[in-house]
Image (tube, rainbow, N blue to C red; front, side, top):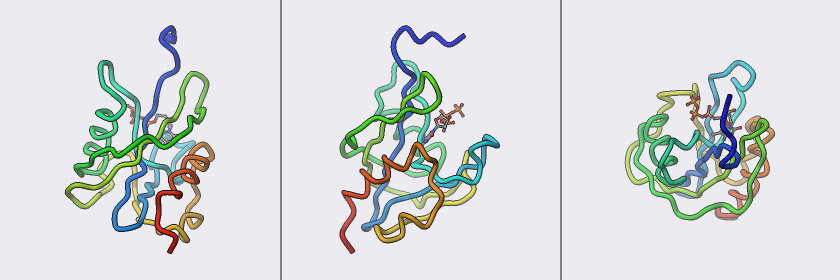
Length: 136
Ligand code: 523
């Protein structure tokens, strides 16, 4: 059984910005989430800060180097015992590729954010993240 004495399991996700667009990633697993779009990320490993976890996850999943900028305000419930927290991040090097956990990536401008079927729990995070995108 999961030990929740230290609080919820934190899942960190990245609002990854580049040239006025935000990266959306389509999940390929598990079956109940496959085909839905998310801000990429994953669970913290023991001893990691959220920022370290996010940089690691984006490296593993997308093959890119990134740096975190700041936390996006808010916290969103996932399955029981899990919460989603989001950091704004910028691309330092590499071109994201769906190496792990995703089968498609798209860079979305502000007016394109509704063009993908976001996971329900990611929608409020994406709405917050959109505030950092240019108006046009
Ligand atoms: N979410 C979610 N939105 C979102 C992420 C990154 C994750 O709803 N933007 C959910 C999906 C899973 C849980 O959070 O139920 C863990 O995310 P996952 O599977 O991406 O985390 P990993 O990669 O750390 O998981 P393992 O493959 O199990 O190590």
